[in-house]
Each structure stands twice: as structure tokens, then as C-alpha cells.
Image (cartoon, rainbow, N blue to C red; front, side, top):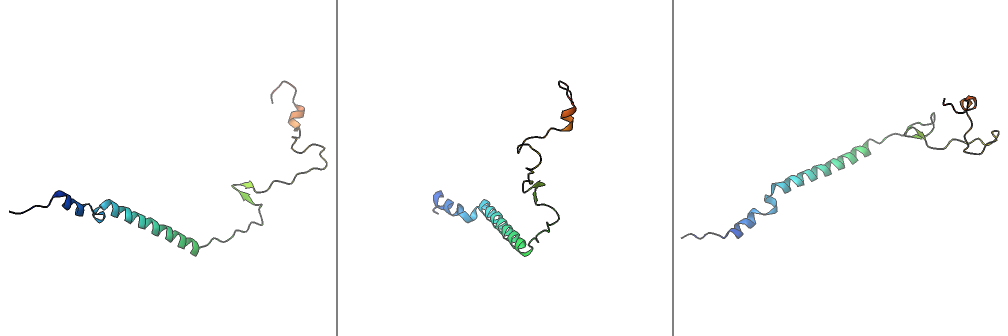
Length: 98
């Protein structure tokens, strides 16, 4: 009569890590993403950006000036940060909206 192996011994070979297709898929995706990162770094090093000539325009970041404008402190007689009255405010009558 032929003897059969217990199921615990046969399942150990079937459960080996190299027989799991999900692990192979994960390894392939990981290798492809790593190769893509390396390729991006190589292309970035090979094709460096040249600096722009910014002498014609002031330095800006997202169309906002990088430095505050120079403040005028002489001749106005007002404190720094005070709002000067506009001509429209001076001609408006009290109680009416422009």
C-alpha cells in the first residue's frame, strides 16, 4: 500500500515566498519605480537649467516682489503706514455712499 504525506508537509513547499505572484508583482513595481527615479536624476544632471537673465525685471516670486518697496519718509508729513486721503474721499458728502 502507498503511503501519503501529511498535508502539512506538502503545503510548506507551496507556501514558499517565491511561489507567490503578488510578491513578484510587488518586486517588479518596486524595481521599475527605483529605475525611474534613477533615470530622472540622471536626466536632471545631464540637462541642467541655465540661469535666467533677470536684470531687466525686479526679482519676483509668483508675481509678487521679493523685496519691500522703498518708503518715502520726507515731504509727506504723515506717519509711516498711515493712509493718505484720496481725492474721492475729500469730495464725498457725509452720509452718502460713493
